Length: 261
Ligand SMILES: NC(=O)c1ccc[n+]([C@@H]2O[C@H](COP(=O)([O-])OP(=O)(O)OC[C@H]3O[C@@H](n4cnc5c(N)ncnc54)[C@H](OP(=O)(O)O)[C@@H]3O)[C@@H](O)[C@H]2O)c1
Image 1 (cartoon, rainbow, N blue to C red):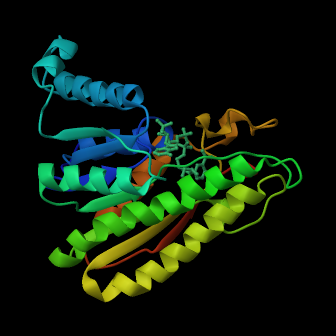
Image 2 (cartoon, protein in one colour; image 1 turned 90 degrees about the vertical axis):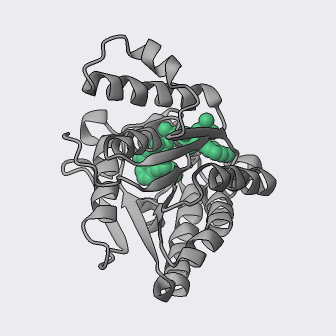
């Protein structure tokens, strides 16, 4: 994909950026010139995404010893990876404080961090249920609550919520995940109406099955050839954010053409 600088001058905070869809979002946003804060619990995963971005930038600039170049630019002001557990209020508030100190603003917040456990209602451990609510729903609420004041002050900003088709339909063995994503869709719809006239856009993305590690413990995952690629979701988000600064497409469903989900 050619870089066109569609996010030049923008600061984006992406949660769950250490792998999967979040990683693809980070690469696509960086390609388009955004400054980034990448969140996840594992610094290892985040640093590997940062290195990947550095490598791609260097290759683009025709530099072959990319890792060396990246070491030189370590501490670069363009990317701020932070270990933040989105389910923890103090963690999130401190993280946002650091992002605002570093970049002075957040133009785009992508609430992408997520966790799924696929079991029947009877087999779902309470801990799994609580974790899905804590990461998928509470995490998006906490991150939004922490970032929103700075957006409202500037009367400017985009908030993306990574929901799912599981936020629109029920599926057997997905009750906790569906409940968290239905909750997220409800949160997004209310938030959108609260901030619509205050300069903040809210965009909900509902992907079908995407080929990521979210499926690693699923007993019977779809064929990866019949799943979306994380990059397809990332490009969709990018298009939704950049196609117009005036219009809003507030909810998008994206599913694989051939797959069942
Ligand atoms: N894959 C699909 O089929 C699909 C379909 C529709 C929607 N989605 C949604 O898309 C989003 C991304 O999922 P994915 O498929 O890319 O899954 P993934 O590969 O499992 O990645 C999940 C990401 O969330 C982060 N995360 C998990 N718990 C966290 C926490 N407590 N605090 C901060 N970060 C946390 C993980 O990083 P750490 O482990 O380092 O914290 C990781 O970066 C999720 O919201 C998911 O529900 C996925």
